[in-house]
Image (cartoon, rainbow, N blue to C red):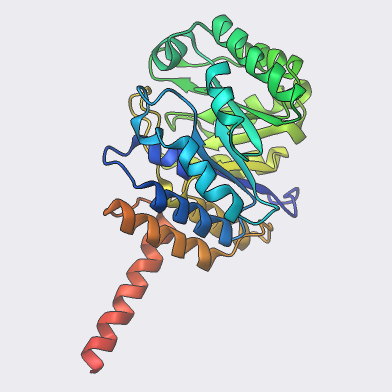
Length: 315
């Protein structure tokens, strides 16, 4: 192990969208904007900031247009902002912003697809192609998420064959990047290795990203497996925020700080300042009024609290 690690990887921060969409209490738009600015200040170069899904389905992200107009101009020029765009109606709203990338999404199982977007896989691919065609014609970069790639809460373990077919269809749409999602956090390193090996032949490692949830504590082990297999793009969420509202058992994403800590300890460059990332995590806890599950964040805040207690006693 560890003989073929890349020197550098790209981390895609999904917290402001995938993280916040599950929050029941509405987060103020200016707080979301400030959170995104703090995340960008840590050096993260790609941030998914919102979604143009109907507010009826995801009320937390109803302020997508307002948020984009508030924050995009304040970020460093090299930061790639992105948003989920489900259909042509959402794309028209997306085009009113300065967001740089269109993100599409679909499922690898029929049951989850029906629960999530009320479409079959074939119907979802038709809808995605409509958006991809106009987005590419307009010069946008396009990324696609495929959910429940490893296991589905309704159908169990997913075989690689339908995933390969879906990825082939996405490549026909000239999608630039495909993120494979372990939506319920059930993947294991062997399964990840098998799927990545098969898809590397069809898709190409340079276009593949991995998106792990830490439901069963296996996310970092799965990242390590992906690294060993040659994947250099990983999604994560500040503090471990997030989960799919239409996938029972889908708890938080892999925490960005946990991922960065491990990668830096293995001499893999991310371009991210871990201390500034923790500051962003502290701000997220403040605006959400709760502790986040990320382990590195908890450890840092625990040490900070002990130092403060010692200082009080010294006085």
